[in-house]
Image (cartoon, rainbow, N blue to C red; front, side, top):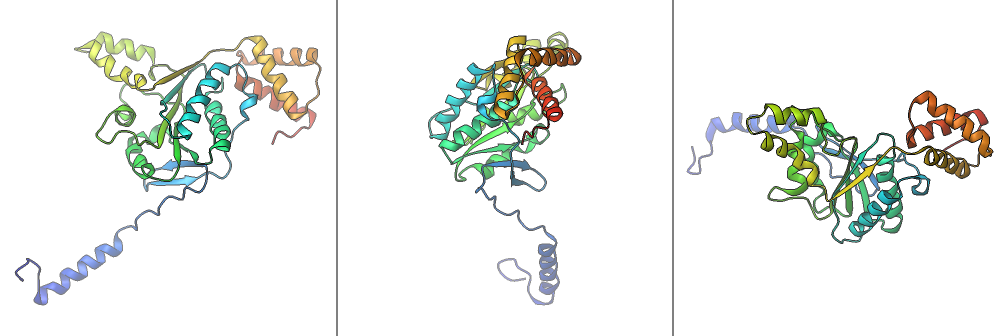
Length: 288
């Protein structure tokens, strides 16, 4: 044994061979992310940020009935893209009213003005690895919207703890070049009966509820989406028809659209688009 603790002599060769074999078995480090695109998806195990060639989205001008949320999110995103302070945003409310569509449309509109703005989608199931994702984004070229669609938590879900640290805690905190936009059908990101159960069964009810509800408080912007009226529903469809060149008179559109929404038992932007898809198919019009 040499004075520095390393094996020498005959015993050194087997140890060296073992070390070299272990190095060959170890997986190669993941390649550095290529941020030349504008939209990406985060995948853990192995950690990687993959570009998206074509984003599924609609134009900002086609999203009707959400003007207040649109203007607020647009202003926040423009400030962030220019390097000014901006808030994390939670878009919550009625299903099918364009929450995720608005995030993607706002990104496209602002990215056309500020090419450095990019969007990275993170699925709810991968929130446990969000810290590692931020480690790759920290210091990367560009400004990043971290987008989590359909965010919600069950009673035994601990992923919200990872998200809390990212939003407003931890030593490092959120990188300056990252903002988080999330959508949810629930304002407090969990079912009301779960909150009531915490209040009734916990040893310290208020503390048990506050720990989970405080997650939504870490979003500086709360943008509410509510069910649309019939006039707004018809206006959405008329906007789609005009944008895609489908000629249909108001009386026929109203009769067919009202019948369609009656069969679905709901009115929303999603139902309006589904009617539009059916109408375009019957009239031989391409929507792409």
